[in-house]
Image (cartoon, rainbow, N blue to C red; front, top):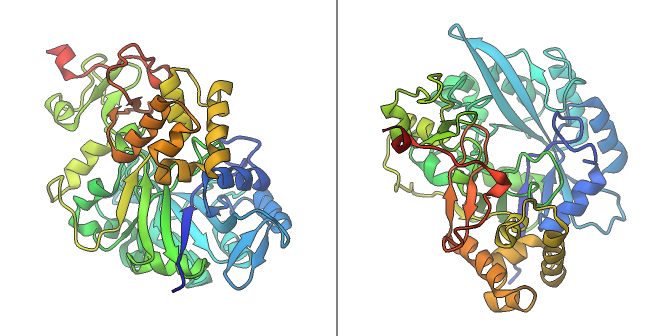
Length: 432
């Protein structure tokens, strides 16, 4: 019996032509670190930018039988590329300004060129790898799908307070409200770092959409690229195989998503970064969403926004739901155990590289390797930390208002430095 191929795909990243992105973000470096991470398939990102598209045309060659790309025909790299981009639409809806980001998947560079020709009428594609378009969401979908029925559009990081379909500041209350008659072409929704499938399962109106997870990475470092991803089992890797698995929410092919704990995301809880205030939804509601320090409006977190729209309890799981696994980047696990300030430190890299050399890639370390095998390479505490993350036996101090959450692996290590040197946040009890 032929065994299906496991495909780990991160379909939403950015090139160096996007704002706040590493200038070393080339096709070659993306492929190199995708291999180290353990990805099979990576989105190109930013095909709407003319310079990046030209680089893709010069660097990638399509494997015509599967509709995906490799660096060259004779490349030894196992990494495949899918032609993808993210765009921002800004428009008025019922006299309110809406700002929504969308991911676009397309089967080849030729269709990408045609999409660009259409979208260039609504904004300058040369300004940013993620262009801002003066058009509404239904119009975007209509333009993209008129190019080819094989294209796919889905809302990006759906719950982020800014620039998302359900965002607290400029979002909608349903997919249908955003995409209107073009909702018939929407088959998936990207959950983003600050939400995960169980949070989205609380909304019955999202049941028909495949919940996808991607890194939205702005660098190729392994603690960014592939930090969230989608896991498929396919008879053969192909663009249409991925597309159909998403369109039909096929559990036989779309197996699970890799998620960071949503509390680790930068907008999970409601709060104010400048005031060091982080609040659960219940605490924020008690305060009327007003900061108890500066008396200004709080940045509403994803958990609170989900609570506003949910029609189910937090433990509900719909029939036919695709599974998920919570992981954290290996570099950040090592960094936390070593109690150092950065995942890029030489000490972290040394241990990281020894594990990847032994097991082949990061995902194999995180998902498949036994504690005994890990202890052959690293000390028992690092091995135990990896297993604790895999089994969900960790604590996350929630992120808020642009500040990442703080990872606590061993609560007995009370002297450990906070991740990213984060200051101690305050909560409601500090003001009672």
